Length: 154
Image (cartoon, rainbow, N blue to C red; front, side, top):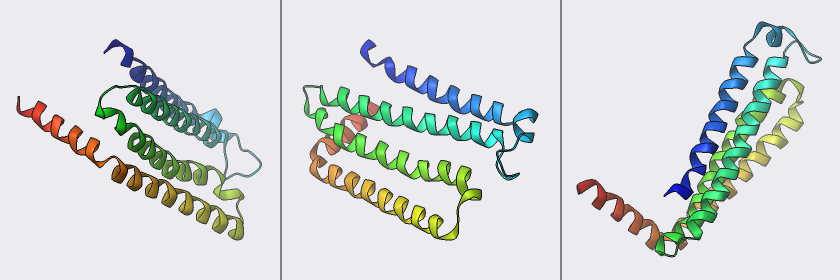
């Protein structure tokens, strides 16, 4: 089980990035310094970088987790695809919120609409991938749920 310790390392770095971004972004210096427009501050840039970095790390965590699960020699290896699809869906949906919070003051109506539709299509594609991965690997998912229930009753 010691070869799974890397998950904790990723989670610590993700949480540290989010907390540090929020703390630095809330400092008076960062709040008062603007980036060309009073609506965008250095604090919002710091939060954007921290949240974007956390999302990249989360996706890297998902990739590594999928690789580690795939390397298992049991039927559980088939859970790798649904795990990666789920992480991709979460990251894609979250990336929209992170991006739009930062760049909204710079967007014109036409570009905002194009960006919205790009993310809508990306989120739908990730959701369809997740549903397909669950369908293709439904036996492994049901087996994992069954093992989880049996472990709780013991």
